[in-house]
Length: 194
Image (spheres, helix red, strand yellow):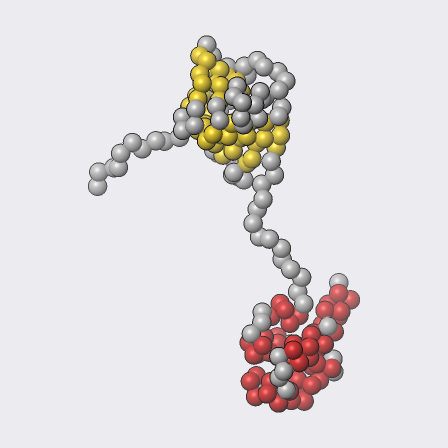
């Protein structure tokens, strides 16, 4: 770890010199802009003076670069979270929530003829709400056989035997909200009176 720090600090001087030269700035001009003496700037660039935060902050402002660029900090990468799809029996589940408890949201992509494998109805704890974005969905719910088209919604207790499938010629895309402990959605049909 100490060797990494020394390597990083020893690279600051050449980086400062290269940045100043790229901008066509003299040590005297940089000294006037930062309030740091010419001799201190020269020693920083040659590695004769250890860089400190008090010296680097005015240099970063004068060069109009982030402090990270002066010290060569590693890129932090893309801060966005990219959910990993899960594929089961030909159906792609894209998690839209990351919390472990409570309501969970998924986007499902069901190719025609999916899911593959066991075609029996299943039961489990929970409550499900689904919205068909595109394609066609077949929902077997107990003794009911329902066909849902884009824009249609279904809500049901998952303890009732059920099975989702795509009978259509194109993929079906759904938004699914699932409450594993039976949580239900609250639909407000009109504004509350105030």
